[in-house]
Length: 347
Image 1 (cartoon, one colour):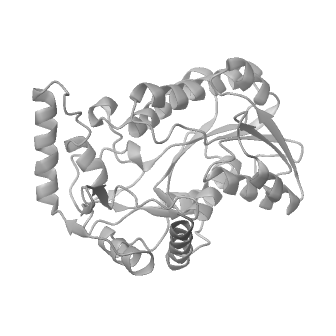
Image 2 (tube, one colour):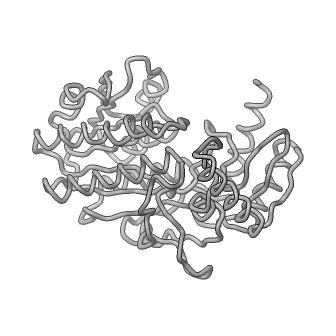
Image 3 (cartoon, one colour):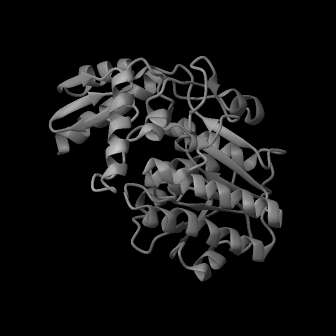
């Protein structure tokens, strides 16, 4: 473990879906000095509850990652940074870039000035992969190509994550900042009850099932957080990239069937891959012809990334980090479905 007893570990996005589990995982692995960087309006009650049940010290620093001064203050004397904070839910590339890429640059610039960082863990996503020009039998692992024209998808989130990885590598190359990039698959669990778009899309009261027999790269949130923690603590992995996904992957079709059985029934129609590809192609061409009167958010690049058949590998994270998923797919799905049912009851 590269962290010494007196080392300070910084976690951004600590009040988020994955962040809370990362903080808990650090405490379980013996890290005792944790600093969390949160917005001024963030509710930190869950972090306080975590601290009560573990032996450790959590220092809460409030501020903005868009402020270089706040980043400098938060990262002072820090040995490892887990950077989970990012923009989600926005459709505006400019906003996603600002809250994912610019914030990452501010943090990296701050630690460059301090000169004491042992590792920067950048939490990216499977969304960066292009999944283009591959045979259907090839496994998508860390060597697979990242989208080289990030703007062409019209997907603000993947655009920002691709650019975030680029800036992390740039600072690693130019300023010798040690880093690790982790790419979680579809992270699910209590607190994130939405059906992933890799399964399909809800529209006009009808769910369009697009995934079919495709495997979904699920990662239960606790398993994912544990792998992220290890990526910051393990020896001799600087400059590496790790896919994070669980064992026992299930198909889109299996997931949809289980969801309807365990949560709620709704109407859905399966769109075969050839048809969904054609529809994305026509949408893309019309968007170009109309000069984006119809935004080109569904296009062939999006189709390849999310709905083209692929198999996935978690071999590297298991062999290099010694990670094993603690929560099985069956147990994780049971917990997820129970949370979905509770959310429906509250709604």
